[in-house]
Length: 572
Image (cartoon, rainbow, N blue to C red; front, top):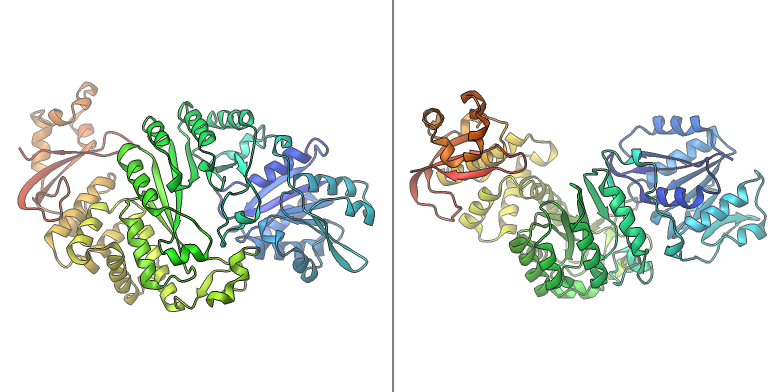
């Protein structure tokens, strides 16, 4: 019996953890089991042809909100070409609407709901002889949805014993090249947030610590760019989290580890440990979602915002940990203006990135069941995104989408910090008002409908909100030279020429007062010139200040290190 398990990932760089678990668990009994991964940006016709070429007896699909529509198209066409193939669906997108899906889509033979390792193995064993399993056989398979005598049946769901699950990362390492690797040390969630499916997965269960450490050690040696933990709240068990973070700190690797962290649960002991962590070792994702107490109560979320804010400041000031803060627009009882307050709270904590998302009424979520209670209209098809509520209109949410794009381009890129800080202080006093103003101008010119080059983003910021302010131009040029090391300063941005000063610094060796680490390299003047830039500013803008005095300042931008740009004041 030939078995193929597949999925459509959201991006090429993503990798499916569920399929690795299923292969590891079912592989010993079915060593010929094949896993094939694709992504939603590929042509479905090509994906279909690849699957048909395998000529499987059993085809399993891992289903999520981002791929369910395309998956249903795939299985419909697959059944036409291979009418005898048995189609099995699993994953969060089918686990809470299984009977309805089976009723509407006759091409689906079976659905496995919830954790699927043991149920899939039992189902494959029942299908192994090529015949139709008996009703008694199907009844013995937990978490299975199936048809019998024209009726759809759902068996009681099971919970896996995590100590019995083999590691999903023992082999097939070639599949991980150039991918984000997903990893879990626990299943379940201690919280009951009503917009999230994790609240339906039961109490937290943990994988054996020895297995977790062995897997992390194995993956760290591969030189993977990023390992992203899918634990719902990594630090809900403080001592276990400390042990693992200490272990990760001590790994000899360049891999970055992203963890979902309860921001208000970070203890001082963890901060002290993170102070010793190497740069770029950790990235924390911290869910704020809203700062409106009424909204937080409505969605069943308990967060001590004062502690969260204090801990974010500690991360920023005392560690090299990157941290991302999440917001969700469209939650119950949060108006457009109140969302602006939440945005300002998050922005002022100066996270590495702000992830501005929009409420999705996931199948199985408690908030979806309560949609009428807060007047929530949402798209009928995945990803079931909110259109409006009694607290926020469709137009306001659509405008927040424009703001989200600007936050991604200007704030999350990290390239415009000095310029944004100056413009916000100069005109608005709070970040949300600034992005509102920029978004209004952006939308008026229909700029949200087209893509923009990096240099174009600098130019548009100047044209839309620069107001011919020479200080704003100085900060824009400072940001440009701080980040765009491979590009010449655009003509429209250029200040007083500094070429002669640069030549003089090289000729008389003065440059080595600042870049002494380059002197032993004995570079030619031409080679040395490529390692730094010099800019002359009319205002004293470095270090940053809200109202810089008008005073000439020469700055050297040192590009000799690949991971950072160092800046020196050479005015004297």
